[in-house]
Length: 424
Image (cartoon, rainbow, N blue to C red):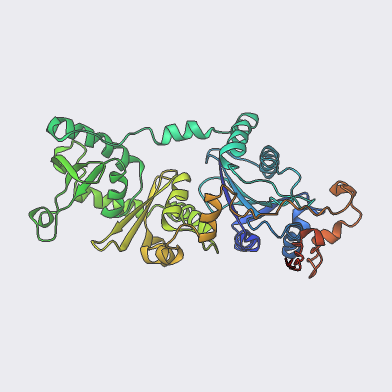
């Protein structure tokens, strides 16, 4: 199981993301944890209002929304009941068992997964710290759940998927060593990854320090439809002796690759596999204004997706390719749609990874979203459990203006001291 945590201050946007999937038939709300009604009996407004009322208890904490995706191995067939129990166990493990939460089962990718929407604002107005939540509580809980529910372990799967190391040899090793190293990479990439163009193939090969060179425009290699396979160093420079495609016994020639391109393009699962990449990008960028391109690349990498970008001499981004190691599919950005192309991604990302306020907060050693004075707590109710609350339906009603603006949350006004002077 793989857990991915996103935090933000845009609760409504997160809700709309999951509800939109529901409307499209790609998702189902399978559980409403700590809600007064079952998930199937709740309207969108009732789902929204329950958590919004809790957010209103602490208006000083800006980062108050937690959006988690729990991802499982494609071989695992989990029922709604199992997914619900796993979600509850996960929330308990990270200290969110008493928080209102909605669990959505998404069915638009090649593997089973759920999205959990909740908040770190507690019923008494205090907040749950999000500092190192993924590194500490989440990682520990994930490992425990894998054992308790008999799930495929993330480490085992990672070892299986990434067992081939990139080529790392010196040019002076000679042709025989170079050919052997390239052959190992080609054997894996050609047989396991699904690509439809030479550019997509190279995105996968480059990941293992190998490149397929079809020659420059007008060159003899290009005119004869030839291919030279080369080793790349860590900076992407060509090293070693180039090997002709016809020298390999499995003949990775231009002619044979065209057949493979067409076969992969007609694969009926390719459209479904592309949804995983698009969903991962949309999930990260949906109505968020603080995600830079480097941050997007880093988040996608944690989800098993490498992003290969191409820039011109002026440093301007002109191409992007996504390499999904889970589905073993490679997609050129423009093939997924305009919003996933180099231009589309550039427009959806910001230039600076952090705002000035976030930089100041980090320098001061504060949680992003933590504001000085947030320790003031406003207590509501008598601490009774949700099941014993006589006004449960009120939790699903909208928050009224001024309903939660108690004096405890207001900054006290400082009294001005009158000045005086003493004469001698």
